[in-house]
Structures are given as structure tokens and as C-alpha cells.
Image 1: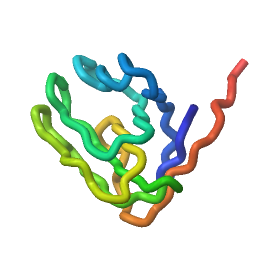
Image 2: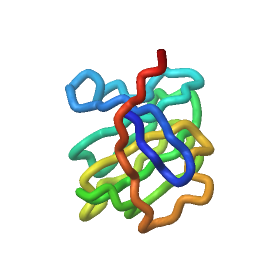
Image 3: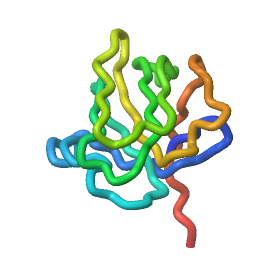
Image 4: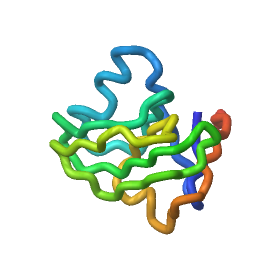
Length: 111
């Protein structure tokens, strides 16, 4: 799956199973993909190697909170009305504002 956020299309890993949710972006070096955590309203950045950008959305993927350049070993406490959390490589959120929508798009196979 990919998501369209602002003018960027980012490949997304869906983290709905326990192990993927547990690991997320921990221990990963530079990556060009994001991670989607359904039914998640807060995160931590323990054991992460690099800073990340984080977006918290409601059930319609309207951005309620966004955090740029979150360093390792930080916590974003659970927030009210948040349904989904997205973790992105740093720099994806340039020009993004609260109230914008994240749009899920199907991956287009290139052959």
C-alpha cells in the first residue's frame, strides 16, 4: 500500500500483527517507507536509530497531530480521538498541516 500525504507518495508497511506493531521502525537504518499502525493512539521511539516524523489521525485519516523530527527515546502519549498512527522517514511532513488528509492508494506494479 502507498499513502499520499501532501505532494508525496510514500510506500507503507501495515503493522496490524503483533510482531510488526512491536518492532515498527526500531533498529532500522535509513528507510524510504513509512509504517501504519491501525487502532494506535500513541507511540515510543525507544531503540530507534534515527529521528522520524509521526502523524496521528482520526478514523477518516484526517491529521489531528503531527510531530517532526522526533528523536530516539521519546514518548508520544496517547491522544483523544486518535485512531491511527503513521511513522515516516524524516522530512515527509514538510508543508503538512493539521486538518490535511492522508489518502491510501494502491501500489502500482511497474513492469
